[in-house]
Image (cartoon, rainbow, N blue to C red; front, side):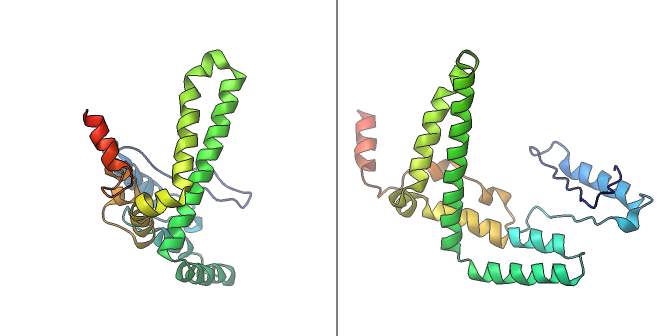
Length: 191
């Protein structure tokens, strides 16, 4: 609730596990803002859990009415019409690959800077490398992860009544039944 006099904005994201009181906190915060002496200077945007990514941006831009924001709204419309689900899934895979690369590099730096304290992080370096290779592999994406990435992208762009649709699930990481080598893996692991 501090005054912002430098022209910046305050964005507050309230996150947490189910049942910890996020909704209660949002209702309390809204009540405080409604009675704030400078209420007429505030722009408060509430985002429903089911909102698509596009809807989130629309809700943020909605109360801002001038030509600059109208141009942003038009650009958002053009960009969302041009982005196909398959392209968005490819971009998601690329972003995940880049994120895993950065995570790996940070983890390597931690291990190298203090091996005695951070030596237990070494396995995470290998996991990040393998996960990145898998995600960036065209074969793995086409044969295994394409449906998963499309579900996540679709739920993010189109909105969903089930926010879990935007997340990876345990079953998403199981190779499909017709994946090459899966039969051998299953048969070999039974022996």
